[in-house]
Length: 161
Image 1 (cartoon, rainbow, N blue to C red):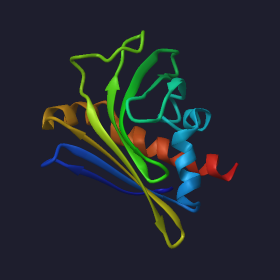
Image 2: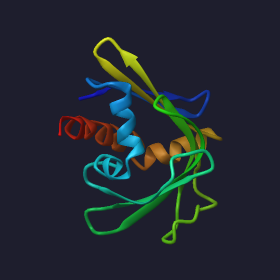
Image 3: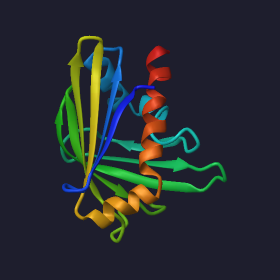
């Protein structure tokens, strides 16, 4: 399992997930930069993703939906605020309605993805910071920790292909 640590930081209302992979930073960047690769791992194994818009540059938007086992769609998206290819990016991560529009009363996080070299490959640290402890608790209650662990675990198979 590539996830080496999950930290719930209640002071900063953040969930921090650290994972390591036996590939270069440039190769790991591709699992984010290529929408077809992103689809193969974003979301838990039980809820595969479909990326419908992918503009990974400052001011761009990534839109997707996950499909549950019962066929129900769970739309979401990212508003990209900064990119440091291939080292990472920052985005506003939001829940969306069926048309891909941000749901205003749902939690929104500032998601930061940081990729760095390690002696054996690359480390990925994904931080999702929320405005309040209540928003963090809402997404934790929805299964974000377990879903993130499942999603990150699918990257190994993708990288081996």
